[in-house]
Image (cartoon, rainbow, N blue to C red; front, side, top):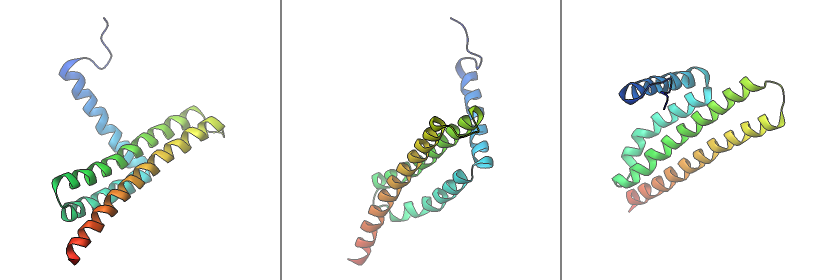
Length: 128
């Protein structure tokens, strides 16, 4: 059995953590959509604490925000790879980019539904 270039054990975990930090920095630096969605999540986070009726409801809101960031990171990685492979118009590259965009759209719709349901319930409790 050969060792992988990133090592094994704790050393591999540390290197993976370092690569993750580099990935977040790259997404923040090069992807306007990631910055916008990260700032949206930073805005929504304290709101989620206020409007959640219980911890489980807050977890739904929290993980819906994480899902948006996850989807955007996947989409950004896919687009960067696609641009490296081919900059001219290619139907398959275009399809891959469109599907990546659809992933983000699904995540944003999911987060919106979770937040609107929670907000509806919160306002209903306030008006009683």
